[in-house]
Every structure is written in structure tokens, then in C-alpha cells.
Length: 237
Image (tube, rainbow, N blue to C red; front, top):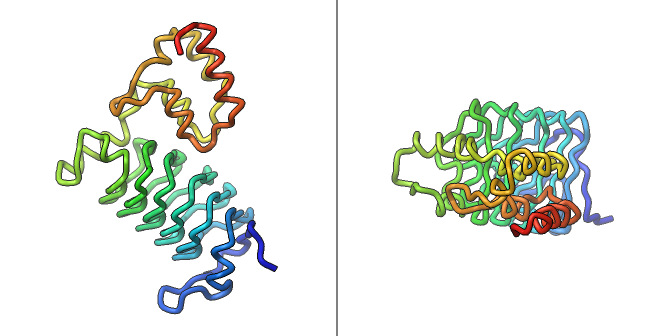
């Protein structure tokens, strides 16, 4: 029976670079809209969900530590990822051409994001990583974030990587609004402590905190409505 939700349960290889799908047919793979990785899986191997063109959501347990090369490449409708808090490595081209991804916030445990991991993710506008995370080459090439940034692909690569890691250092409300689990209580507390002007501050590509919430795939409509109501109460929308 073909299912829209598929559970990946044992870390086995489901796709071969030469032969194509090994377990599920191409037709079946293209019916999946949600992938649930079962608790206990530590590695999502090479090309496991490659080219699942209707996949929209991935849910990872905290057991996942590594995402293999090309694992989600060409999942062109993928827009929501619940990350493992213990992810350590995202290999080359893991999310290549996931053109519907708008927001990615990698948990701070991640040590290494390798070359072209998010290249050609055309809609990617928010990309947050810890200062300690090592970034490969061309990680955000041909994304909206790079297009809006002060850089282009021919400029100083080291400076670009530093910009990615530090761009919201002085925008703490933006950080709260790009969280993988944004909390209205923390956001409201920040505004109360720092003044309503903090909600109007733009980052270096022109985004306000509300823009970040709207882009963030982990934001509920209730949270957005509460945030807008909070701003209206201060008459600063």
C-alpha cells in the first residue's frame, strides 16, 4: 500500500547511485510527503531520499548524528525539517536543489557542514549555524540569502563564512524568531525588556523579526497572531 507518510526505521541504504531505488519504486517514492525517521537511527545514508519530488516534511529524532551525501538532494518541495539536536555532520550535497527550503537553523552540536550541502536551495533566506560549526565551500551558493548578502560567490570565502555565523549576533530578537521551537513567551519578554523598537530592527539583509517568524517553518499561526497582537498593542506594526 502506498502511503504519504513513510517511516525510515533502520539506517539501511534505499537508493543506489547507479541502479536507482533499491527498495521502493520511483512511483512510490514520489507519493511521500512526510518522512519520519525512527528513534535509534544514527545515519541517513547516501541518496536515501534523493529526488523524492513531493516530499515536504522531514522529522528526525535526536538519535540522528549524520546525514549522508545527496541524502535529500532534489527534494524540490521540501520546506520543513525537524532537526536532531545531536546532528554532528551534514555531508556534501545533502540538501542540494531543495529549492523550497526557506529557513534552516542547524543545532549547535553540528561540527561540520560540507561542500554544497545547501547549494541551489533557491528560496533559502534564513540560515543559522553555531560559531563552532565548520563550513565547507559553496554551502549556500545560488540561494536567496547569498543574493541578498553583501557578498557574491567570487568574493572572500572566509569572510562569507564568518558573516553567516555572526550576522545575527547583534539581533537577539531575530535569533528568537528563527529558533527551531520559537516561544511567544520569550519573544514577548524580549520586547518588554528591550523596547518595542527591537521588533522594528532590520538585520543586514532587511528582515525584521516578524519576517523571520513568517519564513520560519516551525512557527504556528497562533504564535504569529499573538506576535502581531503584541505589536498592535504597542501600535508599532
